[in-house]
Image (cartoon, rainbow, N blue to C red; front, side, top):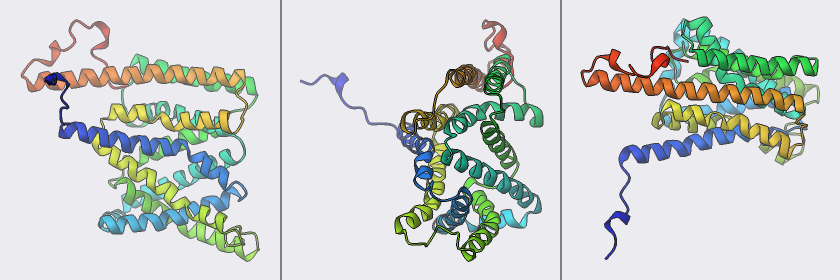
Length: 335
């Protein structure tokens, strides 16, 4: 007779939802971590032309997605609202600049710098939240940001130049996220509007380059043409996967998964493309990694305290009793 304890217990709906969300999250952040492979494959094309194709073909793919999902009303609502449209103009410029710097960095052998930029991005998000949104930062959060700043300062002093690729990527994406939080529009409709705003400039650039005979697209290599046209799918699919993951996963899990992207870039840079990991770079990365460990642990502890407070409040227990024996960590704001 089989042991009853060994019987398979059917997964509950929350468990199935979590597993599905985790799969989508791994697909999204994993693909972002593998982005350099695509841009290395089109490295023969100037970065500006690759950016232009990314904008144009992303708009095509997003238009198909919006049609299938019947979400054009969200786009229209964003466009007719002056405040939202003004924000999206700014975010379009930020994401366009971010895309260009990343493409250029991958093509010119600066992938370690781009990886560093996306490692420090969560800490820059916290810093901007304090500066612009008045959010509170815990002692651990302050220490994490200071440790990250130390890593950047060390790299600057030892290399004799500011790691501008890292800083531009980190701050441009952080400001992008900050502004998008103020615009009442979903990620997919919002990106559709942003690419639509950038598309006229991209098309003008492609047309001008073609008239001067400098356009790579359509010059005989059908493989290269397919790769450039695939920029739309490369851009849009991870975003759709991320949206599906965000519906099912808690923020703490998404917070862990976000480190997959720069980790993938780091490993590709060192193991696949031979970028030198010097001692000074390793020291800088070590500072960033320590900062991220401190930051992540602090975030998890904060969310655990909040969850306990909510549970006790729903149970009718005075919130002041929560963590009364935990010492100095109980009354801090979000990190």
